[in-house]
Image (cartoon, rainbow, N blue to C red; front, top):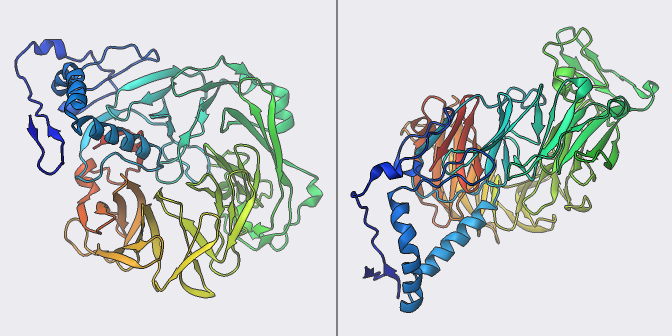
Length: 558
């Protein structure tokens, strides 16, 4: 033990690995065949298989030493007045805080490496704009997805299977999302199973405990529409309502190959109903009005088909004014398709999109509210509160950062007012900056807004004033070769660093970590060096850990 010369009154405790002892006593029990960790020392942490949580902990060497020493260290910390316990508390508080940040990762200061691998067939989406992509959920501190005939939860720290729930025929579980495309956080997972005439539903919580299956009423399907898993432990049903005489195709025309032009002027509304998955009681019901839309949004394949059914081929008549679908997340039901320009919160509040299209484009904000982005000149961005009230409007197009560990700054662009404009989370103007080129709003970390400019620069703007704090040139890729354009795909933060997943026009992905205070580059590596040839794998942060998910499995990074 020695005193840390840079740490005031803190002491440094040296933990010495002991090679002596019975190593057989430390061997882990057999893992499920699907879980294939790399065998390094970081894999010797807890692995659970089943919902009981009573399986024995399998400690590694450091764990074996720390466990008996923990009471002694705690006493020494109190008696000697050291900073040992305080530093541990602060580290734990920081981890808890960053886990609550959407896109928060415990530590991004050092290059990532693969810590463990789980191999298996991750279920893919059969509906919406993310058709064919992997679908997962962040349920508590676990990564959850459907594999084969069960709902499976992985521990993001070890890759161990925390629990699994058997599923019946034709399982459909959600809300889930595509990592990198939508927020995958949810408070519970609702699973539908069984044949259409004998459909059942159950709700699964973070502890892996499932409710008793409830058989859905076939009459409700005829009356309210087909069932889909909904947010907050609900079953959603939706259908078109109103007389067909309300449909006015206007000048809309579609060719036999599905190329559509013109505008559908009017059509039938969409009624969305949420029922309690356990009891069947109605929670809420709303009607989203039809909004005049481009004919391309009324193509069944484009619009997601009839409430989530995607056509495998363009139909004989590709102009279908009743075609609609939805993407369902943990806090929002985003309607899409012909005349659909609205989203509905998990509490049943109807939010109208700002720019008429085949989808509202509404997204959830870090503050708990919602944002309906406008366009550069024709419509304004609308800011909603968590309960659906309009807080304010922003001229032109505005967005929140891809990852937010701060107040929730909005940055916008308006063709009628050149430059970049920043707003409070409620839409109140904050500052204007003379940034002439376009950029992507990557991260807000503390007092720095990190933006990726089209010219190959990463810039740190002062959140309070908009002044440039630093500029980092990333025009050259991690391999040292020049890259004309690098686009932001995803962003994460540990509260100090911002990790940017960038790609160029050739489809090559790089991981770039930078210090958001100084602007210094921490590290920059091709993602192929970390994940191998599956370099386009989307990343997701769960429980403060970073995971890469593909159709063939999940890998833990750290």
